Length: 400
Image (cartoon, rainbow, N blue to C red; front, side):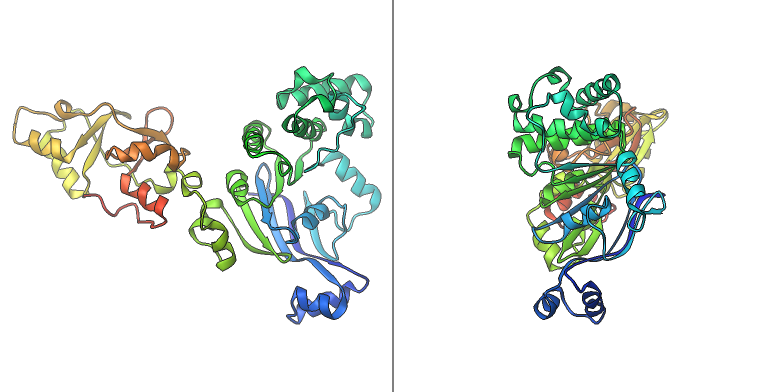
């Protein structure tokens, strides 16, 4: 997938002798050693990543890790000491001031932790501020601002003032201000960090809802790993100016790169990270028409399964268990349809494991469907429990 934004070997050194610091880094000296010897502060060192169009790339790190310095380099607020920052193939780290202003105006918008709303302006005027800077006329500004406020559920508050809104609502205005300019790239620097936990979760859900339709390219900065795991298509864990691991939420939780990352993920709720598709096995099924109980039982034994889904064409008719089939096979007049369980658990592939724990506890394999009741996979209960405990098993193991 083609990258919308690409960073290559980005370094940032704060001080009056940055080249000396770069040379020392090249010789293997640490950030701490360089500061002690030279007074130069290494903010970001040798960071490279790609963000495909329409993806959310989350940079997670503690205070002082370099994440805010990094995001400010992406839109030219801070110039990198060395490296490339490519937007649609253009190196904005090396373009002139006029071209950089054009890129900011036409391609990038930023949402900060602190709302920075103008108290003397209405909500709509705040949302339209970026459009005003671009030279858009008053009527069009108003129209686009109200449209953006509608996207975040605040169109009715267009003529209110920021002080009339809650903190969460004010942050929605900040998001609407960014959306009003229709940017291709959103840079979000801890945008929900000042909100209380309940409002913060609402804003996270709101961002995911918007992203389903807007499909912006988003670089999201946070110090909260749970937030990173919830939002990120891909996540970078940052420490001392470096990326120590880059991967999906599932990759980072399943295989942390070092002890630093392991400490972060130790207490993560795996049920919110992994989904049904991560533990699903290939579907085992038979057709309803013409299948005898004896033939179904033989198929189940060959596949080492304790239950088998039954299809009527390409739709699920139900599920049969080994125990019921064994009893039916002793009676030649009993068919598969006679022991069919039609009340079976079914989920789509993106269902989180914490949402299907109850279904797994019932003991039947869970049908993974494509939304039209077509079987695309099977989740065995033990696969759910193993993933939640961190003791993953291959999907083929542990059938009976």
